[in-house]
Image (cartoon, rainbow, N blue to C red; front, side):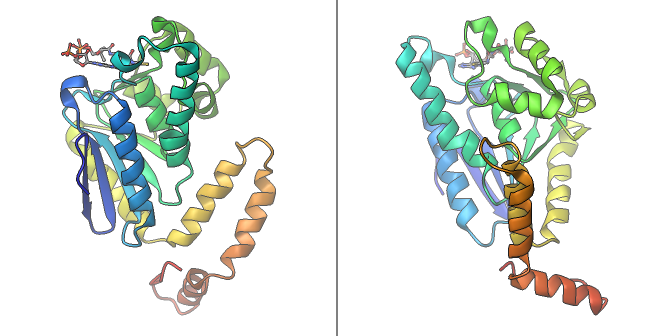
Length: 260
Ligand code: COA
């Protein structure tokens, strides 16, 4: 895959996407969002990609937000369209992928950058990372799902404080509030991402895809998470992975999942 704004590498069933606009602190312009959509879509369909890591290039930023220069002159209608298109192409898209996506937050994750990290299935951060939703300081609100996903992750009060103050929190504060799962040095960030990915690789990718769907279902209007779970649980019994997983346990050996 050849892109202008992102890099995609693949090794041992783990793909790493690096947002690569370091001079603009990896800000998400339209072209980058489209390229990310294409990369995620392609990797999700590839059978030999089981986990996707997402990070930013350079040592300063994961993503410093949506590219302000692209929308500063937008009308109301264009603003609405920007949010809707972005959510469809990238933020909702990533959250609903059946392939697990881990955000490796290697610096500033602000506005759309934090929203992108929050759309990933979970997050780890380097100790230099700073996170926030500064949109109200620009006269706008988070439009890529931030008003929904931040309260889900940290609770309504903490989310509103961060949104209304437009402030930034440190990696340790983010960990204490449940926004990120682990904090390590910048050097340790990719190795930890790879280690967690390797643990995920040992398990059934079919079951993992169904687990993501069941968890997400609980946060969707008009869906019943418990009913979705029952459905997905039942479906697992018809998979080759289930047969292999249970047979391997009973035979006291490690499973070799066909991922079907
Ligand atoms: N959109 C467009 N360009 C951005 C950007 C964004 N969200 N964030 C950073 N950049 C650009 C800067 O304009 C600058 O470009 P230039 O060198 O051509 O002038 C370059 O990236 C470096 O940023 P700079 O502001 O000089 O770095 P800094 O270390 O002084 O400050 C930040 C870092 C993250 C605090 C600051 O860049 C910032 O506040 N960015 C905007 C964050 C934001 O509001 N995001 C939400 C958008 S909805």
